[in-house]
Image (cartoon, rainbow, N blue to C red; front, side):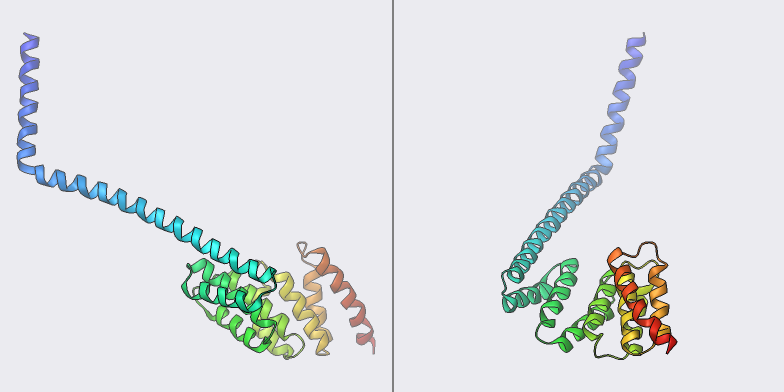
Length: 217
């Protein structure tokens, strides 16, 4: 008897499946297609991203090779093309390199390029700070201390990766401007930061020897 009941239950299940398929077969097929197409589309997008990253990486490496080979004009053109057409991350790196190459022949134009990177909302805070520091290095002998402080001070905060370089620039710029108080302020900030590199500390100690006599005079 149990076998008969089992056969009846199996037949009822098959009948229910046939009814479900008759009513919703088209929807089931469509849903399956959506899943397959979605997975296929995502895999295709991942493949495209990997391909783009490889291509941009190769172009960036080629441009860097031109720099090493002493071909600044060709390197500048290559970086300019990546900055215009490349993926977002490589565009920012290329813009930094383009400005760096430009600095060798036109520092004012390079500073403008760095300023554009700082003002670009698409750039990360790290990239912006690097642009600030590089522009500051170009301006340290010509810009006023007030101008340099306005430009660079955001990069001196305790959590910023280029704070050591930014603080050092301001310390030397203040000393160059004859502002011993500001020079001492930034020097003390560097010496008080346990993560300040040894090379920066050494230069600041040398600067301290120059500041002290001025404070006594």
